[in-house]
Length: 416
Image (cartoon, rainbow, N blue to C red):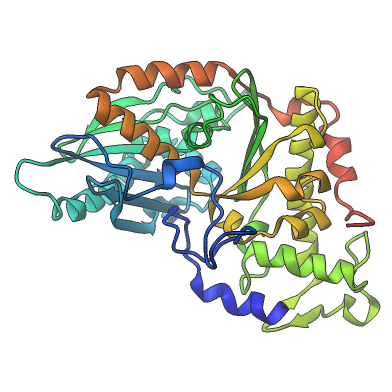
């Protein structure tokens, strides 16, 4: 089992584009290799034509580390993809580093220039696929800081208490001669990529209660349905992206720790057994060290504490959640049973969880469909504004019991 985990790594992309090419999760009764995606039909390609006339749809997810763009054909299928490292990483791997760098106006201008250059490169590539008389229409989603840097807005308010974001409206603009639409954000901590995820999962339409979890360096979560939604963000660090053990993906690390717990090689405190405490345990070509275990403990405690706060504020128990959508490439390979075993998610949710793929790109696709069909972004902007206004964003640092819950979730559950 462990060797299988290690050997699968070569199949994976650095960023999930929701293309459906990954082996992913195969639910009972489905064909071998099928990806169990819970973001409804927004990932569907052929058979779901785009009614854009002479305009061809492009979607983009501007991540802190990577940028992913997709070009769609008139039949709704993905015709091409462009994925690259976000050049802003030269000014820091995290959002805070870039916000501080942008305090220098010259650097802020350079940060905007670099991200726009990448997007224009993707658009030029996609333009080669156009027929005479056709044009491109770009729909983008990004976290709040990336949106600010793209648009050239002053990011200083995002880097200092009370961390207020005055520019959350998103809207239309032009890039490389093409019309674009930027998803509005929810707060300084929860950006347009999460609103796009809400839209991708049709949470604003469904009565059922969904928990959307987007795991990365920052973990954003949304809980709710049509009537009401609550969202938060928590710092998970690099553990879920192979930060300490760079030889293994985060989802696989979760599975390995679950295995160690089941076999009694690691205890509930996260301590490896005596023979392995100092040097770690070798599994395949990965050395699982005490340091790596601690990194995952800190990250999973932050995510789980955020989940518990959302459930408490919503006034429901974990058993009342109808479905869990695990967004991003992490979600494709995360085994819900293993996530529950280490306490990343409540055990009641293990059977309700599935992969969501890149829900930011999926939300851009759903938004783009509407814009192309209506010929304007006006109706969509009104709809998204309503969704945002009915989505409460809480600051976990201001929750008086967050610290206690966080400490309590540092330990691994005694039983599966």
